[in-house]
Length: 495
Length: 95
Image (cartoon, rainbow over all chains, first blue to last red; front, side, top):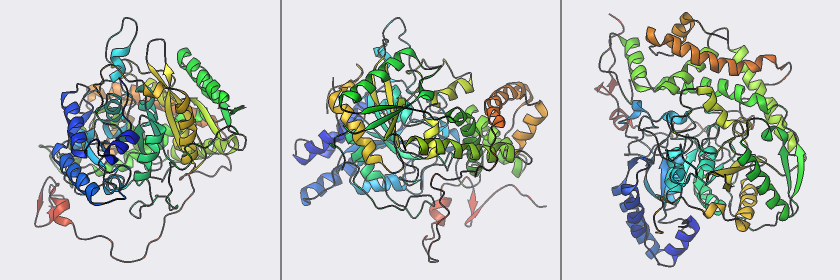
């Protein structure tokens, strides 16, 4: 089995080898017969309508966009008008969005077809997709495990449904969002390319908010080239998002193919210390050697405050979440409890019944950190540490062009194995969280397989707004390796 | 740091969440372990460090004072649990 890329589908559609309707039907069939629980909603009717429109547009126009008629899946955090949008929560189980997220609108304007909405951790809070109200998602690589264990592995999270869907060939690509690693960690667990753009690149309008100063949407694909193609359709300034970056639009494929023989790779000692799985460490070292063969130079660097990223994040993200999620009160949308005594009790009963345990924990941590008398000790201190962490990166980029390390400390773990201990779950994101705090662009790309047959991700971090360089650095590795082309056995044939 | 049951009750009240008495221990244990993780922050001297609220230190953009939103009341209220004559209905607050 091999993978199917957006670039190949784009060429096949352009050459008339396949129509968008045929392609869309094929993927809808695969979704229908899949057993990964990767989707919360499948929007077959709308998808076929869009595919038909795309085929018509192709026959009447010469210069259609690269992804016209290509089907993809959207994380169920993005509002789509007339479509159920749950964010993985019971509180939004029956919420039909009255408007469409800008990122999705941008993609639809480019002729992209939406197949459906993918499963995710509730309100994007989680690293295993196990906090979803709509059930666990099966990592398609579960069946490839060597040794005795054949139980289900988690796909990572929070964009676990998107990762599982792409990995299992249920869609050629999907969108994700990344607040602390929610694109990159599942990409690493499912052998995908996942890109978190610079903060502000993709509009947050219509993307249900978790931690607004950290949230960023991005592509989850097989290849860096596909990620560049998809990001081209997602990114752009949006007047409706007050933190959208007002920078000229650019072609993120423009640097693909540039030589990287003058590249300097920074390796922070902090990303290779205690807690890193030995197999993963070896794979990352091998990947770095591959870059050296391509002409890159290695520089030892330090990010001395990176151990403060997790503590800082677990104040800032819950604080912003507790504020953002106060809107779910049973008044304007979503669930309302059936029985209550008065207004405050209606809020309380609605929220108690509508939110799951992890969301409640984070709301409560946030409420505590922001409560009277604690603000300076928690939120203000966390934001000062955020500055120190960001300064570390600024200093590091004086000595190197890209920072590399493992995306996660371990490969995918067994379902249920960490869900009882919130803090051990948080450690999954120890390498990805500093990037969100600094707002930098970063990617995870497939870097090989552990002795147990599980994929590991190489983490690439570059300076602000340098996505096109980042994508080329990933692309150059993919030109000389075929890890990203490996597919789990459960994948069915090509489209 | 360990949170006592009264503190957990108070946080839950602030967050408009109900934590039943038989779950107070569970919540106080879990929340305390998160606060233990966070406690590493205390030891860091941040005297003179400017808090970072935005990666680009951007401030809010101003826009021209012109109509940008159409009236979507019916559309928005179609997803509300309970409305009447264009108003959201909630339990009576004032007698």
